[in-house]
Length: 139
Ligand code: RTP
Ligand code: MG
Image 1: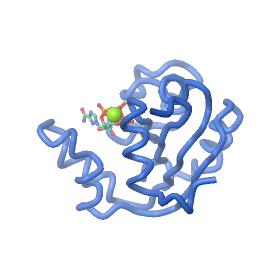
Image 2 (image 1 turned 90 degrees about the horizontal axis):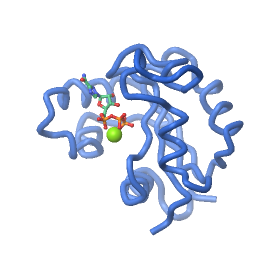
Image 3 (image 1 turned 120 degrees about the vertical axis):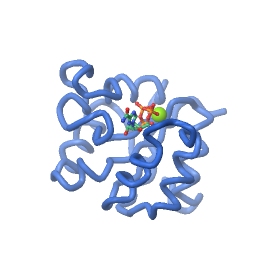
Image 4 (image 1 turned 180 degrees about the vertical axis):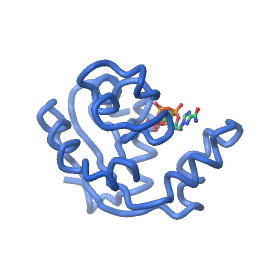
């Protein structure tokens, strides 16, 4: 299992608010290399599949609606200790609890519209990256 890759999405709120450039700048300046990158959108069915792990949670249907509400940016990132370091860089799920200087503290609006996704394990980073990208789209 690779430990040097993670998967991220810039969520519809951050895209709509014009933060794609600033967020990618922060990610690359923090030492992550972009391995794959795509501007795309999730249908409700695809968002539901991506977040299937949260199916039983009370916020699931709102999350699916939000994640399919507009375009997103998907990316695979590479760095030593990628999953843990990226979750540190994005900060807590709830931006009001996110540390100063983290991406969610800087760009997120609410616990749901929280600007970015970051994989929570090496295994999920692999699954989520493959959800969006074929082998020919990774460099
Ligand atoms: P993510 O998976 O997007 O990186 O976020 P996370 O690990 O920090 O949080 P997680 O528990 O996996 O939740 C996934 C996403 O669901 C939305 N959420 N809404 N309304 C709520 O209480 C609530 N809780 C979570 C957020 O968009 C969260 O990122
Ligand atoms: Mg999560």
